[in-house]
Amino acid sequence: MAEAKPGMRKPVFTKVDQLRPGTSGHTLTVKVVSSKMVLQKVRPDGPQARQMRISECLVGDETGMIVFTARNDQVDLMQANTTVILRNAKIDMFKGSMRLAVDKWGRVEVTEPASFTVKEDNNLSLVEYELVNVVEE
Image (cartoon, rainbow, N blue to C red):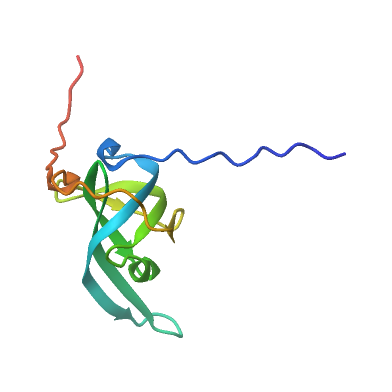
């Protein structure tokens, strides 16, 4: 007897201007505006030395831009003017500003070039947030 398997859910694509601090599980189609290597070092642990690379990439869509932190193999995919799909992306806070990141549970895929132009005057990473503790009485 064949049991009906639950099908995979269709991804709900988010726009950059809908991103908020502390959220995760985002799927976005973005265009890479620029990419800058910020860390490249070799970690001598274990039998083979592993290379650790971190790059900060400015990515965006027609609603705004945000800084994406690319790690290791993701660095090679994040070339300028490339269109990528970020699956299961999350928002990390760094010095009070939002950064987009994809960890081991997510995926970065290069896709066909998008037709939109990046809205460069709405950079969400330039907005500084402050953690406020609210006491309820």
